[in-house]
Image (cartoon, one colour):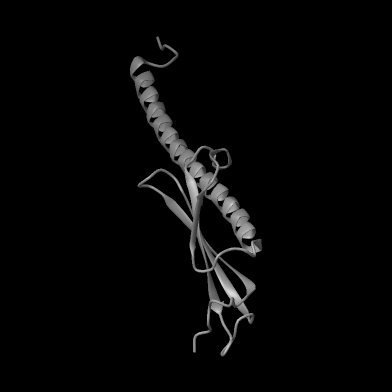
Length: 140
């Protein structure tokens, strides 16, 4: 007489195989979620960097060569610590340029985010037309 159904040994083997498969899937899901969180943080930092770059490039009173720093409001960063550092420098000065001459200025903006010790950074460069102030002289 033959019985239909699975034996206890077959059920244990099937359960073990299913358990191994579920553990593999869960670990892949964990890695995927972590990568998605990193990409979200990077996208948020890139948007904040572009917004800050536009704001600084439009500011005609921005001091040259001085390093400017600030932090972003945590409500804009999703609760992550984030800030910025910028410096405006003359980039291209015509030969024998005098005060009031048009020059090309470079704005370097560095945006950082993340916990202390594990900070990530994004650097943007922007350019604008400016004038050579009276206090500066053209380099030969």
